[in-house]
Length: 308
Image 1 (tube, rainbow, N blue to C red):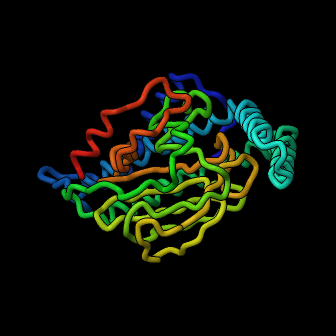
Image 2: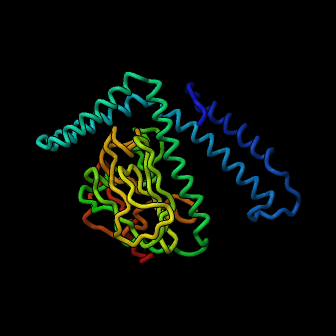
Image 3: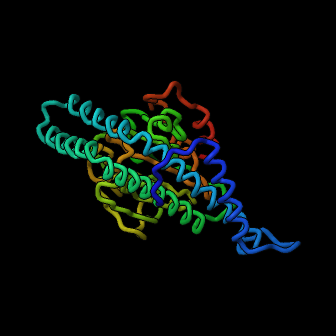
C-alpha cells in the first residue's frame, strides 16, 4: 500500500478517481463492436479494470481517514483496556495481560511513525483477508443458487452485538466501513464453525489482524476476525459446531490489529461475491441485545426465516 501523508480535500479525491478510472479503461484491451461481457472478453476486462481502479482509490481514501484518526483510535483502545480491567479487578492474570497490552499501545503513542506503519499493516491484513474471501467465494460458489442459512452462531451472543453491518458509528470512529458484525465475548472464547464446510484460509498475523475464512457446503463464505489462536488449517473439513479458533480483539494482543474495540468476534459473510449483513444468515435470536446501536433490526430476522 503506497504511503499517503497528505490530506486531500474531496475534490482532490474525485480528480484522482477520474484519472484512475480513465487510466484503467485505456489500459484494458480495446473492445470491438459486438464484444461480449462474458468472463475473459475485452468488455469484461474493462469492467474489472475500472472496478480495481476505483477500489484502489477508495482504499487510499480510507487509509488516509484512518491515519487522520490515529491517536484517537489508540486512545479509544487504551480506554477499552482500562474498562476491561475495572470489570475484573481481582483477576491477577487478566490485570497482568492488560498492563502488558496497555504498555505496548502507549509506546506506540510516542512513536508516530511506527503507529502509522502498524495501522497500515492492520488495514492491509484486513483488506487482504476480505479480498481473498471474495475471490475464493467467487471461485467455489455456484452462481444463481439460493444459499441457505448458517446453522449456528460462532459464539453465544450473551453480551449482545457491539457493531452492526456498515455501522455508521464505527465508520465515524475508525474512518473505514464496517463490513461485518461484532459479537463481544471474553478473550480466548472458543469460536465454532457456523456450518459444515471447508477452511479456505487461516492467517496468523502476529499482533496484526488474524483471521479464519470458511466456506459452507451450501455456498456461504464467512470470515472470523481478530482471532487470538487458529486451530485449523487451510483445506480442512469442518462440521458445524467444531472449534476453529479462539477469540481475540483485546487491544495490543495477538490477532487484534489496531482497529478493534475490545474482546469480540468479528464476523463477515460473503454471498455471490458481495459482503452481506451476517444477520441475514445467522439463526434467529430474539434474546440478542444491541449495544451502542439505537435500535434493533428485525427485518433481518424476517429475511433469515424466509431462507430456512
